Amino acid sequence: MLLHTRTTPAERRRALRERLATGRLLPMPGALNPLSARLIQDIGFEAVYLSGAVLAAGLGLPDIGLTTSTEVAARAQQTARVTDLPVLVDADTGFGEPMNAARTVRLMEDAGLAGLHLEDQVNPKRCGHLDGKSVVPREEMTRRIRAAVEARRDPDFLLMARTDARAVEGLAAAIDRAKAYVDSGADAIFPEALADEAEFEAFRQAVPVPLLANMTEFGKGPLLDTRTLENLGYDIALYPVTLLRLAMGAVEEGLRTLAVEGTQQPLLPRMQTRSRLYELLGYADYSAFDSAVYDFTLPPGT
Image (cartoon, rainbow, N blue to C red; front, side, top):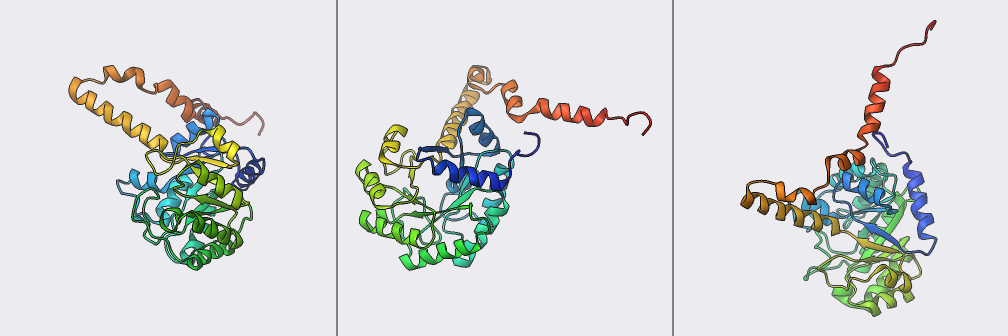
């Protein structure tokens, strides 16, 4: 995988569509940077997620709509460049009015993404598992979706609608909204902050398109295992912030150890080795490529 992925955006979009059509649950870890996306692929997962909360946290910002569409597209492009897996990105509310949502779709297509999700929160949004959320009127969200559909150039680019209405208007209203979003052109639905397994089941019975289950830690909903989610008929199991939380927990503990011990020696068994890092980065491939270029000579007689 020298410099770039071996697959095209169109191939990755088709791969995601075909994978969702199998009816098997697709676990989707959230990358915290492009290198972790390479690791997600190396471990054997079939898709990568880019969380708006993770991107904001990486900039030292809370997840309250402070990032811009171009910042998200830039990180998305960096990530899509290094993995052969389809990448789904969190596009918040579309970053403004329906015209902004349309532009966001074009930006994410150009970045090589396989799809995005738009949510029905008021802009600027809040983290989906915080209290005090507000949602826009249903008609406003359907305009966002229709604008996104109109802007899409590749019909395989997945347009997912997220509804945060469960915590604001109740389960029945969230299901009604999801149906309206599907009627407006959404390919899949992300019901945020469902309270229990019964609510996951009710959503599945009511909405006939692929559904995403958000398995974020320390949130409002239960952490259901993959067998349970597959039995419930869900299509994607999302782990949006898991890697960031693991990494930051390890970093914090490591810094405290370094501050107390004055050496990183006790931490060595927990570190990724230099050789493993170089393996993920493909150092050997780069070295072979560079040597071939450097040592190139023209055949005799040319």
